[in-house]
Length: 162
Image (cartoon, rainbow, N blue to C red):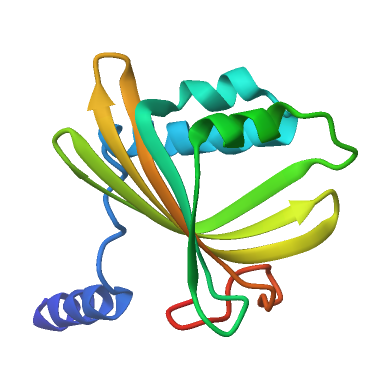
């Protein structure tokens, strides 16, 4: 009997930690907002893209493709207009390694991305989203991204931490 108990303990120790708990409802809601934005971009749907943003939201890029990092700001209006503009290629932003943290009305999401124009990889990097819970649900207040042209084999960034 003692031997069976010892064997069971060894098995449990070798099995590793239990699986991570499922995402909280808030984390699932935040992820759904992010997915709706990228789905809207693929469809060229400016109304659906606009719906995920808080009225005071802003979009920024920390662009390090040149010798010096440049911070660029784009208004949500300009972004939404671009999403809805006719174009020959689908804007397909593919995300991976999404990490979401929530503290009551504030959420942040960090993810790798690869941006495709049609089937051609354009650039990659990371997105950092901030969202706030409103009476209409979660709304994006800030997106800051990095941009690289050198991407790993799966399209993810190859820079530090990526």
